[in-house]
Structures are given as structure tokens and as C-alpha cells.
Length: 256
Ligand code: PEP
Image 1 (cartoon, rainbow, N blue to C red):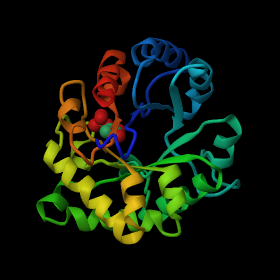
Image 2 (cartoon, rainbow, N blue to C red):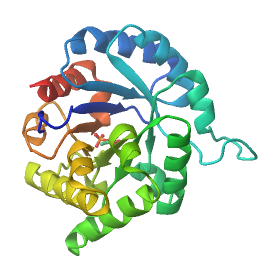
Image 3 (cartoon, rainbow, N blue to C red):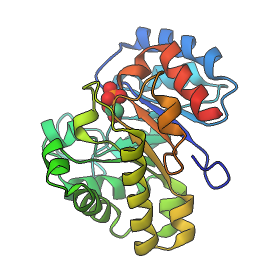
């Protein structure tokens, strides 16, 4: 992290876990542990839990996010939730392009782009996920894959929108939920590559202001090392975000 240039952001991605009652209990457990955080703290929860999470976090330093939103404002999309719906209930953040959406639900770079646009049009802050498969890393095309994902997702996004309303999460697919973590050097190398790409596409100021997280089996033990890298501005945390002490330890590492 470079604290002179950027504020770190630690976001939990609860995935398809926790009922509303369990959501309340976990947030009540997390709240006192992160109250003095010197970083932004977000919990992204299933749609069904958003209302409970918003209530439970009121008056605290924890913000709430959704895990996806549709690209259309409304319409015949059974089972989907739109950005205006999220805006209407007051949820400020939304994850878009998570690799599980890309792998299991047919998400493409184009639909990620459309969802990002819909979220920005509705004043939501986007956590935009990008990442390569293991095979692509082995083929030495990691940066090409990431650059394509970033360029398509950000097409038409202004520098102001990028600086103010987008957090990029670099999440190597092979490290998500597998217990395999990118080394701190691998994480920083790709995050720096993304920052250099933003400098090319926009300008150096925008690149320096953009928050770029790492995600992929970040936990209480490896967070310190990953977060000490200059271009790793926080983390998107899956499994470890479901255990209050582990999530709090990562928040503490990002607060140093
Ligand atoms: C994620 O879901 O974004 C993630 C990084 O999961 P995990 O921390 O479990 O690898």
C-alpha cells in the first residue's frame, strides 16, 4: 500500500453464505473488532441479507455491498436484481465480474462492462474483479488477459468515475477459494501492471488514485506480506471474511 496516495479498502465477499439472522450475528461480532480501522471496511452480502446488513452496520464504519447487479434498469430478467433497485435500498457498493460469475453464470467481458455502466449510472461504487486462469499464467499471458478484461470493463468510463467510483480487484482464479495464494511479488507485479495500463489509458494521476486490491485466499497469516506491497491497496476476502477474528486481523494489517 502507498498510504500517501491511496486509502486501503478491505472488502469481504460472503458469496452464498449466511441467513439474515446469521448476517446480524456476524456483523455484531465484526463491528467492535474493526471500529478503529484506518482503512475502508466493506461487507458484500447476498441480496437477501442486504437489508439486515444495512441495519446492523448503521452508525459503524462498516459499509455494505451487493455481489452483483444486472445491466438493465428493469425488465424480463427472472431472478436478477438491477442497479436502480440496489440504489433504492441504499446499498453503496457492488461487486461486478467475480470469477465465479464468469465461470458458472456465463458472465463475459461485455456483460461485465454493461453491468459496470449500469452501476455507475446509479451512483454505486463498483468492485471490479479481473483475473487469469492457471493455464493462462502458465502460458505467460497473464497481463494480456488482465489488460483485455480491464480495457473492456472500463470502456467509456471517465477518469473521474474510475478514481471515485471504481475499485479494481485483481483475483487470480487459481487462488480463489483454493488455499493457493499468489506470492506478494506476483500480486504486486499484476497490480502494478494494471496501474501502468491505467496510466496509458488515462493519465498518471488517475493511475495513482485508483485503488487496486488483491484477492485470492488472503487470510490472517498472509495479509501482512501481501498488503505491504506498494501496489496492493487492500483485499477482497472470501473465506476469511466469514470469521470475524480473521477478517479483523486482515483489516488490522491494512490499517498499519
Ligand atoms: C473471493 O471470493 O473474491 C475470494 C478472494 O475468495 P477467497 O478469499 O476464499 O479465495
